[in-house]
Length: 190
Image (tube, rainbow, N blue to C red; front, side, top):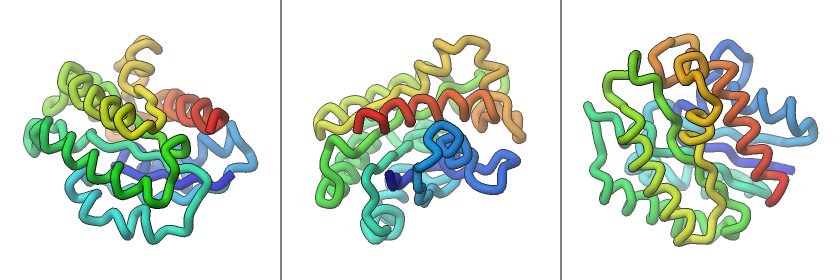
């Protein structure tokens, strides 16, 4: 199975591995998986749409497409208003369905954060943006995975959210284990 993973730093970060951490996790769970990863740290939904051809449409077609966006859109120091975020996500969705049929697209919510360390994001805001991602996924008949809720349900958010940066957002092994399990579970259904 060939999978295109894309989005922001949550998909892009290596976190001490020799490849993006999520690539490494997925290969542990699904040994036969082939991964293209075009994620860009710091990207928001508007910039992603502007680079959609480079990041998705011109990449050799894979069996499935996984997108995680919203993490940077919701940051209060550079916030994209919720309605604009929704429009951006709809534009992205309407473009990718030309290449990927809806059952082969997975949208993932932004992650939960450790609010004690993360000062420009909070989980109420994450939940609002996650709600938009879910609405767009439903509207386009894409699959949806709620990473925010999975992290909260796993308990001890301060431990899960701890990565090399230790900023309450960019997580390490525990967070990637949760994300890897979420993605692999959906990929098995696709």
